[in-house]
Image (cartoon, rainbow over all chains, first blue to last red; front, top):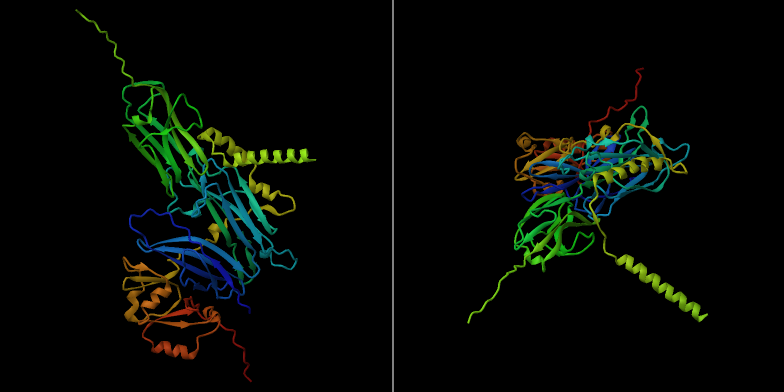
Length: 347
Length: 189
């Protein structure tokens, strides 16, 4: 009986949990033997990333490896990943790519494309080979976080399984290209949710005692975050402004987790792509895990205007996907005070 | 000949300069996409579903199937639910159920989660609590219930006043109940 050497690659995704205190997380890897149902704690010390060998042989059948992290206070468990390996079970890997280089969780914006790479190896095709070795099944799930949702504490068993499911019978890399997400939502600009792609084994049933249900080989999800929107209050379109600039209020909604948003002004009518002077106090840099909204009242920003005339003020957000204009307003500025007078002299 | 080479070099230089300009170009500013624009794109995505394309790909790499959702049918269970928690002196750890082979009466109140304890891995917890925890190293077949424990081990356990945990290669392992063995039938003469 040759012991199988299984390499476990445990990359611990940072859990996006908002907590006032610094939480303590402890990672565990559990090996579930099938069909014997023996459970082994093979987590000697699970670091944030790394690999270790499992010395518990998986003959016959296979073993499922679950990677968990436990938060001490309050006691909470998070299943980070699960993978199944077996003597003749194919290997599969799902990798999702987007334009956002954020490494912790794959994510993108509601208007942007993403790509799913599925690599399958170890598929057999012989007439005598077990059914479970001849194909794997690809599943596609979508799940909305709801209005304002962040996905924290999400019950992923409630995700919607889309059709069709695809049986993959050939080894190699397949790439699925999605121009846009298909997470359900009435307003397509305000989608919050995730799409998940999972590869499962085919159920391995050999009566009377050997019955291994379809088990996950690999799975990855991509978070979809809404497009930002913004508004400028305090100045109306074509307003004629004399002497002192009024207080303006910038409202930024759903700023992308990795973004820089600001208001800029430049002389003339609106011109897409023009670079202007940043309005003091309007800049917000986001480096977060979820979108944020903010309201910024700004006064005393006259220094951004170096002359009178026609001006445009616009709100711009810079993200990994490019530069988007969220709002703009044009107005006429006249701060010059003219004094009409006359001098007369008398002898 | 020289003129031809010079022309080629100049063309190449112009081409490289053009490419460099494209690569170095700053991202273009655009107006944020609208709901209506995205609805149009979504329709196209739904019509050209990449999953359907994968299934229809030439060479029979894949095929459409219909099966029940395995992520619901065969989802991983709760780690906490499938573990016994051992707590002592501000620390706690999780071991698989059936890994604790013996709980002396005096330590029964330590098989629970204490409020405010810090969860640590088994190795760390055991290092601090060797005084009252003993491990019994078992084999895979013993864990499967296919082979009983050695008599010596059983004797030591009966004398031991510590909490006893079954381990494999130092990690806690569940020990399943002994499987009924098929006794050879002996016929009476």
